[in-house]
Image (cartoon, rainbow, N blue to C red; front, side, top):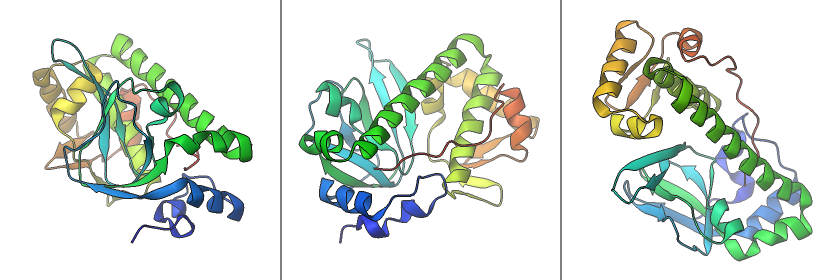
Length: 242
């Protein structure tokens, strides 16, 4: 059975803004069902005009762009609570692709109803605007990382951001969190070669700053790792949830 919005497990996480009863009922009207997909399943393709939008209820994925020569740029990682497909909802088509990294459960929304947010619930429409602004801000940070951080700083920055997000979603237990990505995914996100990424991760492990193996990320001292990554804010911003 599909999860009802009034009993959504994501709403228990402190990172998400609280919703009043009317907002919950409105979101329930917007939701048309749930979709479960296996790892590697494409959710949205670049250039596609999907009739559906999604919220990641369980599981993780990634956003990426493919160049004509087949090389890939990972745009961002997808965590539970992330809204997927907003670009197509506003612009008519996707500018990047989205793929499931793990088994995922997604809340499915009717894209044609997106304008109801703006007409009937302007407060909820602001949530969509906020999500778009946060994505732009993140891409700005990523661009600064690609252009100005060293490989060591870049990977330390990325792993720190991941761990902070994991903590906010109660995914970190005893200093470790499940991180089911491949080194190639991180390399493709940061513009590094796989060899350079592997060597840098080994150096971070030797310094006892981060240890990533067998799908588990361990960070003994988050503040020390963040300092290496030139990341000065470890407080996650409260996010709306759709």
